Length: 295
Image 1 (cartoon, helix red, strand yellow):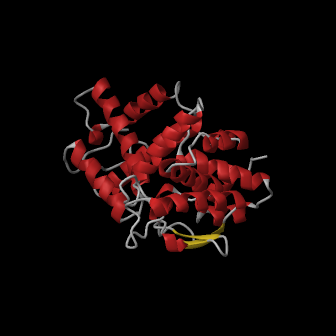
Image 2 (tube, one colour):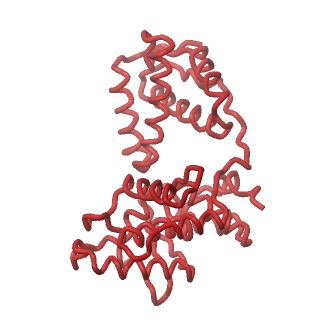
Image 3 (spheres, rainbow, N blue to C red):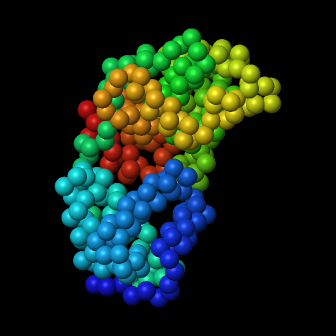
């Protein structure tokens, strides 16, 4: 099946239009949009290498099947499923906006999701990640707070970045998290602080108080080295560096830390419904697909 282009435009302009659609119409987070664009970029590079004359609007079902086959030897089934689902959504956008007449991926089945493929840290690995950081410095305590907040409360990178000092209640040992995503469950949830996370945050706040940038006007909980609210990329960068310091051989990401939190909660007896509330997710099917097989 060949999709017929109704309107034309460069691939770059098309991808920019799709990114705008995800941001303004679908309310996707910046992190999710970057993930979508990265996979679209990978597909675009495949097209350029296989046939430079073929644009995103000129692909055929055979082209997409060739891409599928090129990924299969190196991608786990869940990763492959994600990449193809992103392409399918992109081409659905092209059809909905009358750039194409048909979706060239509509008849290509997605690989079945395998429940056992989430990647997480065992408790010993998580502790190694934390103990590899210097508790006598601002940077070390700040990085422990980043890792602790994601790994022991399950917040997302965006939620972590947006946390303010006022969201932390040491007396009640709670953290109030406000989601920026309209389509994710309740926009506000209150999370209990573990005794361990309470100590990590107290040590960080002691160091934060000494930081030159920690003025009375600065409301952000997590600061960068310049005393400003830390960025999403800054959080990712600190996790990578902490992983290197700890000597862990496999990649650790914020998503892996969040999975680690969810797995520990399931092992502790939390139901899928309770886990959905803790993670701030709206769709119980997503939680079930990821964590129902955890033991």
